[in-house]
Image (cartoon, rainbow, N blue to C red; front, side, top):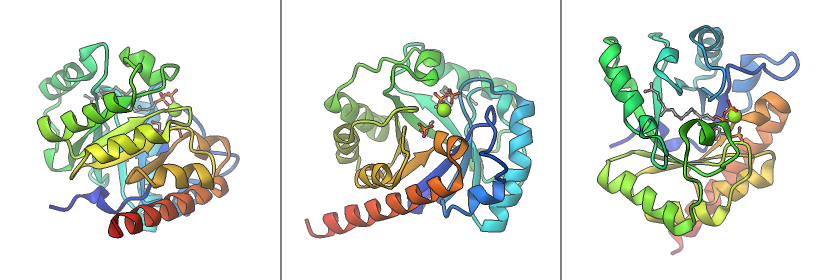
Length: 248
Ligand SMILES: CC(C)=CCC/C(C)=C/CC/C(C)=C/CC/C(C)=C/COP(=O)(O)OP(=O)(O)O
Ligand SMILES: O=P(O)(O)OC[C@@H](O)CO
Ligand SMILES: [Mg+2]
């Protein structure tokens, strides 16, 4: 079966609690060559801020022929817009507070009668940076080594049928051995990596292990020229990974 993210090497994650860089536009964001845009963050998320980003972003994504997804941090920021490609809803496997594993989801499904399941997918997060907002918010246990992370990845795929596993180092560049271990543990699921990717080399390094490299802060802090380099890095890393596998 094919999934929309099968061919994504790179995602830009836009945080509606932040501004775009300088006088850049959503069109500039899409013109980086990224494969998809996700809109989400942990702190300061409101329906109003989400809507303010979603509408122009959908338009720019459509102009560039790339998909636009909301990644909600809670039920209130699920903005229903027919023109969205859908929702990538996190479940945090190593959350200390199980509300972020199933509780928030149960609450959402009970309250929201407009959920379009055909456009709603989950991402099985493994949160690794203890200093990130998401780690604090979910009380994540980040004291995990490569084998621990690989086991979580396998649980996600084999026991919970997750199609996306997300190794999340939000705000800091992660350990590529951990990402490699997660990759080796997966058979079918797509591996997302995110955190601290700031240049070509960082994107290349993680693109050699993860299927998809997610770049967040850089688009807000350094802008689209810097992000364009990470698109190149992720693409070249993917190429290297695919050719290494083919010669195994
Ligand atoms: C049930 C619904 C609709 C939602 C719940 C979804 C869950 C489990 C959310 C908890 C994890 C979370 C907050 C995910 C949001 C995406 C994410 C990890 C963004 C990264 O945020 P940070 O970079 O840590 O935060 P800031 O950029 O705000 O500092
Ligand atoms: O903001 P950065 O550190 O690039 O992380 C990207 C993404 O994984 C955050 O959810
Ligand atoms: Mg962030």
